[in-house]
Length: 109
Image 1 (cartoon, rainbow, N blue to C red):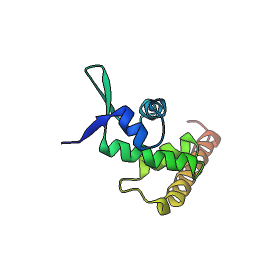
Image 2 (image 1 turned 135 degrees about the horizontal axis):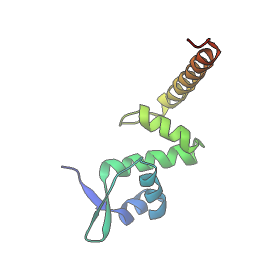
Image 3 (image 1 turned 30 degrees about the vertical axis):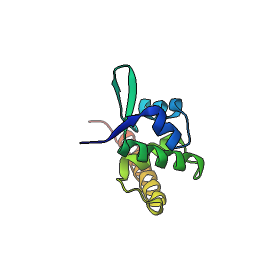
């Protein structure tokens, strides 16, 4: 069973504000639980939010890049893997774009 704490406590622990954590929730990066009018976050998602803050503040990643990293990385997160994850995603995007261009250039049936 996951351990949950109030969102305000998690925000304080991560040295951010509740609104930032709620924005992470709206982005689909973390989950929150509402009970008796209060919002809670799991210890795992608090850890994830600290990682997101590090990506944003220290590495200056965009929200799109953060989404790519989170979609392709699993805890425990490794900062060493981030350049490879982003490079792979960039290569995949270029390959997809090239395939779409080739399909557009093909004569239709």
